[in-house]
Length: 475
Image (cartoon, rainbow, N blue to C red):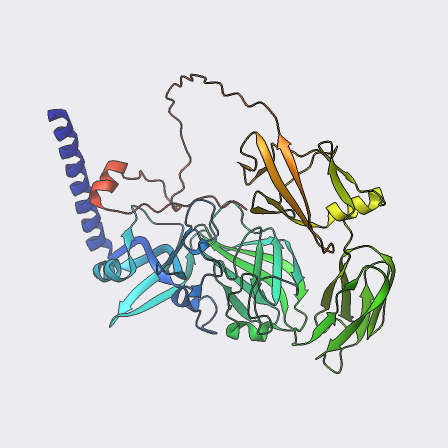
């Protein structure tokens, strides 16, 4: 007990000494370094030459706005606890006189050394002033590339950049144009994974999940040319040059083709709301013949098809219509423990059914059959893969009979069958003895220009300083 008291006393003394040293340093230098919660509007104001005020962003997804774990898209941000991301927590340089007020209103937390990049922050009559980023390492410029899409789930434009800073937290992203416009990106609504950034310019204002997205500050991006993208990390600026990437003008037109029966036939096509100087080039998927008013086809199999309209001049964005050709036929059957071709159909018909598989229902639970996390239900021989997993969770709990329904796009009648898992599951208990091992982990704290020893964890804990961690960002 006396030993514990001694340890606590030593820690408290050390914390007091650290606090005294910090106060003395602050009084002497008048500048204090720390981290604080900076609203988007203030964070970006000096970066984009006050072109517009960057609002907080309501999350486009129900839960991701509060996922600040390692590798999450919103790492480094802070929120209101009710679905709105307000800004970022970033290193700052402040006057010692402002520390108390900034701690109370903006969660200022002192650092033990000068960071490599920071913003100068001051208070005047309660008003916050935040400078352009001070990058002690100097701005890094690299050559990369980018591709632009006008067909995004999340807005009117989506740009995918290569050469951006990976395995680090992105606190800010700015899209720069040849016309000297600068567009600030915000987490989740604009900034997301794999170097992809999307925004609405006023045409598509409801994203994939059904949420409204901001567009007023991005309307002027239509028809502009992106030349670079600037990334703000704890190391400072990294600007990626991407050549010249034109943003074709989006407009409120429509291309619509009606669903119809598979086989041989035709369906109507309408093209409306196009600018007068749009020079239409109309194409369709292989096997389809298209005019401005009609799509015709011969021996077309069930599934989804596309009609594309592009502008020969490249000034305007292309547009696409999707439609489904369908059938009441079911070209598969489950027999002798395998999914096979139904009587009267070909193996090609079976393959088409499986290629268009959209969802699989197992005992009332629905699983997607497409994409990275789609269920892989069948083995190559057509037998059910009872070991299949979705997001690392096994789909089949164990032995027993399972009711399975296959829903395939273009096939009006789902196919249901029962499959019995007769595999023998044995549980073996293995006793594992582990030996504690000390490992050394690289520091994830804000980088500094000079070497310095960080305060011990016990000191930080007793001093009440919040840790500021740079986590590696995973795609």
